[in-house]
Length: 103
Image (cartoon, rainbow, N blue to C red; front, top):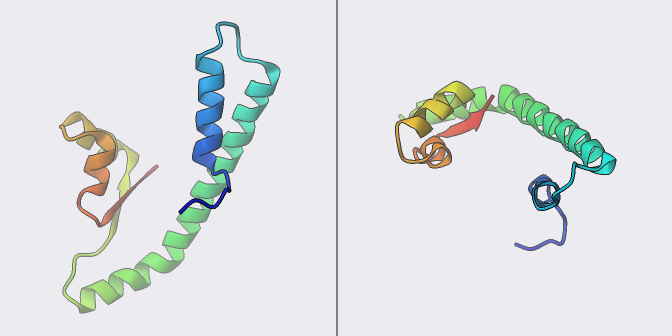
């Protein structure tokens, strides 16, 4: 769905292409934008960690009552290893439908 709202990924893509396709050094504004996006990403990660810490135990308990496997968070090192073993890193992390790539 298109909402007109720019997301973190669009901001990052815009910054990336602005830096990559300019032959000079990154501008002061681009460096500042990098720092701002880094903080925004850290906020998103913290929010996700808080959500999973609160909600995941109840979700896993409900899955267990239905005989389903629990959801286990995938650590970055395991995610990277899956990518090295084939199938692409992102695809490997999400293919099973019950794992999330995170640090």
